[in-house]
Amino acid sequence: INLFDFIEHYIEQSKQTKSKRTVWYHKLTLLRLKEFKQKYKKQIDFNTIDLDFYHDFCEYLSKDFNYASNSIGKHIQNLKVFLNEATDRGLNNNLAYKSKRFKRLSEETDSIYLNEKELEEVYKLDLSDDKRLERVRDLFIVGCWTGLRFSDFSNIQPENIRGDFIEIETLKTGEKVV
Image 1 (spheres, rainbow, N blue to C red):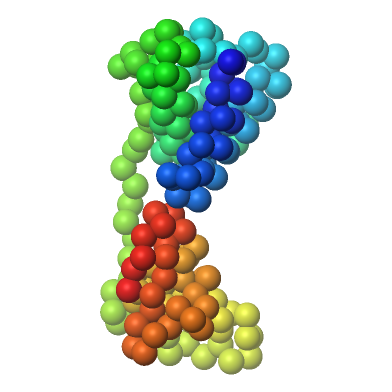
Image 2: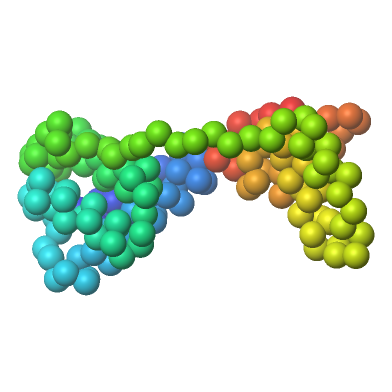
């Protein structure tokens, strides 16, 4: 079995145990690997994943997609998940990806937030002449006060509202939150 076949098989199996978001990101990593292979006519398989591949793939993600370090790091993390699983199953014996230089990139990000007074100002903003902006504002406020991700609060349905509570299964983790 080659690397791409293994990743496809792994993704298919992981649909039973991983969140939809994780499966989606694994599929995106597979797509980026295939695009990289196609663009640079590189042979990519278990035995070709080394530090040269790592640097070339990171550069590709940065230049072609303008990905920041954390996004590149997520793809490297996914690739390492695939390779670790293949190694555990006896399909891969190339351990170059375990080098400390073959690492998940990351950088600090700023946490930007609004205080209660600022949220109140946004809430009171008269947007009645633009229904779309009014709805966007309302969804933003719901997201701020509930702490839900956009993917979750934008999918709230009437059946999720029970009395004074919102009950929803989160898209990213699949956990039920109230």
